[in-house]
Image (cartoon, rainbow, N blue to C red):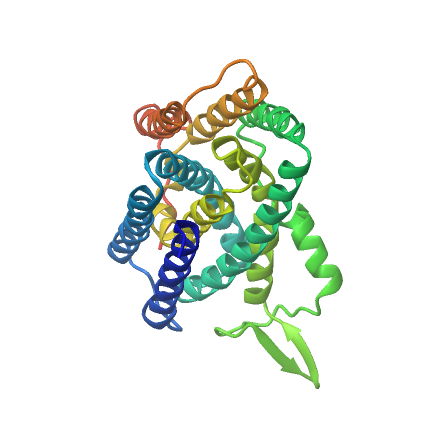
Length: 315
């Protein structure tokens, strides 16, 4: 058995067992995730991702392990920005606390499917057209500059999003209280509740996020033959989204400058892709840049709150 096949088997087994554990113990109906549980679950998912990185190091060497770890941390940091949008969506639809866990799990499973499809398409394009890496690079620079300079007033509005408009157009929906249900049958007609709408919206919104994150991960792992590293770094980051949501929900409004930290990372990665023919930076430089920018922006946000001290999101 070659190393690549063994890593695929271990990765699949780890994800499957983790999801079974998650579905069986952490996603029961009417379960409210406390801050303590969120911390434990976040530590669990991060430790699992790092343990898989150690396994990659053991099987394939330090370079692959560093590429995997850099891509994972990049996707993980980008997912923090996604969570703020998720919080707005849940608030907009008035989802009850006891329904958060199940809705998030289904939305994340949809996101995983979309990520797999995007990575497969992206790998095919990179393998066939090398010049597309320059397109990715220019796109990331543009996205980073736009993100860095965006004003506080440019807040995500669920009602104006393409996902919400698509659902209202193509799905028979009801505003009736779901009571934990995703579908309601009324007058022999199946109607989707707001919980179903949130699940679909989370999945569709992740497509927008993937447009940024997939090109970014190819800058860390440019070899399209290393799909396993790309898949695993993305999927482990997405699997940790739910626990991270509960961990950050009360403190989301305090990270005023996190967006700027992520923007700097995207610009750096985009420029790195554009100059790779003349300047080759080792993967550890990207890793240090990601850690420095994200941690720096979080600490700076804590000590320099530009909006005053906001009220936390209440339980």
